[in-house]
Length: 289
Image (tube, rainbow, N blue to C red; front, top):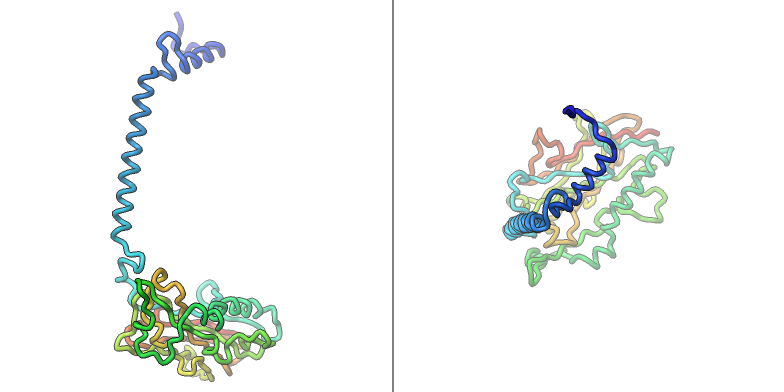
């Protein structure tokens, strides 16, 4: 009498496996007859067709309720954030550190700024965007026959001494110890400062004991209202963020200082403890040399 754990030979195992693949006595392939394979394959084909159809219908229904021109929910983004270039992040803050006599310490920042300013090239702006200077009804001026919108130009000439000049041996003033930084407001669809107040920038030392000269370009340090509102990437594909260039003229050298650049306007929040970049940007500066 065979025991329960009787081992089978290799030939017996191969014979059992071959009969599993094809049993000539019952005409079964892998345990099922031909008609049963037809039934089970048909069932799974129908099942997955129904599942794919339901998934496609749900996605189609969802997409029909979503506008491609603006986000459906914007309740958590009411006030724009503020960013700066060059954006050299350390572990806990933005830090601009370099040595005036060592070009290798600031050359990466110069190259990053040159690339950053490429979309603001005068020729490119004149080709893609409209000159809104002196226009009273900007919204009508930017309108088109469909839901798309034109965008206002922002020219390099507005950046004054901070504009990039390829013939300048010291672009952006790093070698002189008078670096240019660029402050931009983040985009929020349909955001407009309340009471038609023009956002203006102010860059000050974090400690009130320190003072230094700062030059702004444009000189009024403003983000012109012609750039508000932003209508979204699909409606306004050539839109470019307005910005203010800040030239730090006589900041102290060989000393770590903190600079706070704040955008002031009705509707822009600057005291959100949960988001330090809402309405303002703080960075550390250390110029050696």
